[in-house]
Length: 325
Image 1 (cartoon, helix red, strand yellow):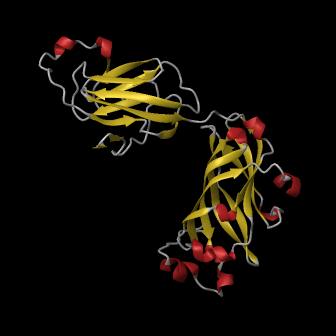
Image 2 (cartoon, rainbow, N blue to C red; image 1 turned 90 degrees about the vertical axis):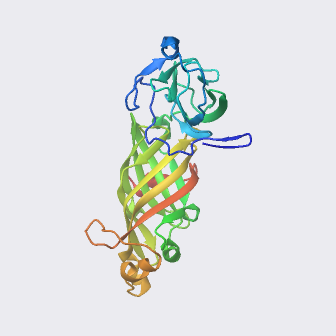
Image 3 (cartoon, one colour; image 1 turned 30 degrees about the horizontal axis):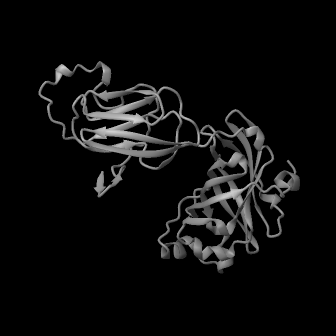
């Protein structure tokens, strides 16, 4: 934690990789959780001074997409006295517990929090009192309402993070966008179809791939890995194990925070480069290292692309309408 004037910066310590939900389980090494009302103040007759400060509060300040069943945790720089701490969530009833070592405390809401709502945490360690805010996840989407939705992801709107050589290979790409069509959903899964779209709007029917979407963390979702052929100048290039993560937003009117990953089989580019060995000559110039493709040959480059948002294209006929089931 760092304090600059009146500015309180939380979360500078590495955040735990797993958030505790509101099962009342003590995940701290040793130490059972004690409720404040159950503490025997006479057990600590020498604790007359309290010098601890707040070290970390979870969820961190201004965190978004916080689960509605989260627990609020506060960590202290030292032991607090039994009366030298407070932890609450404004407007939310719940119970609090102090760890046996008195270096952390937790607040358990009595019921799940509301979706898509901002909350304020009030925390105190001795004389160090602070507040922070977080925002809960969006409400889940009814997958049945998305049947037939088509999302259009224009290629120029993608940002390439891998490979570094993507900027060199980019001019050979010969398609307008990647489109995804949502099919029937059941429970937490749904059907998804992908293909590239030519300039002018026609899908590349020869490269349609069918996969399954997982919305167990609805409205967040992911799709299973599948190979996708994309058009390049006078040829196609296979991107193996294409998978996507994103979030259904605004009732399914768009998808946000899109990340696509896969492996680009660079052998499809070599005829365009007059036989240049991409992995042996070009990739090292950009700091890239080729990895094995599905056939075991080290002729693929790991790919990662992101896009902030893509709309539901209401005017599109969709993949199935163009290409059949």
